[in-house]
Image 1: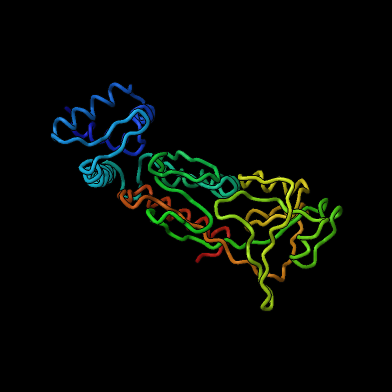
Image 2: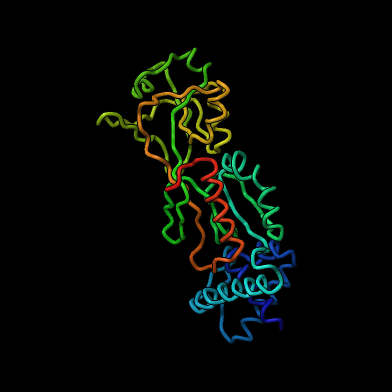
Length: 301
């Protein structure tokens, strides 16, 4: 058997938790995937996977084997990159997931520059605000705002996002302009609620006073772009990172509120699984994200 192919297939099955899903990502048949893993197990004379009708799980021996093999395969990829390409030209596939507003405003417009700098890197980008299972979804890294609650991930803090409260002129014409954050609790006001895993409200401080605004809402949204659109449509006040609001404030589509109040910045992280060798393409991507954050004045931590 081709042991290297068997090892790569085993890793994909372990990460996908499914022979079928692994076959889809490898673009081969489920039978081929099953045979390669069975041949690897026979060659090693150990059982690597427990198979059930719903899920494929690693055995104790399989977990130990996976931990070593995933590093070995990544190191082999890195060796090949160094031998067959210039040291400054990493190559290969990188799967990342980033928040949709960050993708639209910052990352995607800069991709031509990234491609010119690293033409041998192929990016598969998920643009969403969903919680991603890096192992199960076979994602190399995520860019996320807020604290990284999963202690099993390596998280690198790349910036602090400055936050503000904003509303559309149409909303202020209808509801009036609030002077104090507590005014948003009044019967004539509402917020756009963001269904984020860390939730709202954000604490606001001024001269020793600290308040949290929950407020009533007409709509709750779990996507950053749709959340912004709801605010622009006058559906309520909203909390935004400044990079999302900047252009709309300049055009007059959004009005800043409570500018003399301080909101704790939102950390921006790049996170990746700790048991994966940090390949060259991941290292340069993280460095590039830090560069973009500085360029857009997201205020480095």
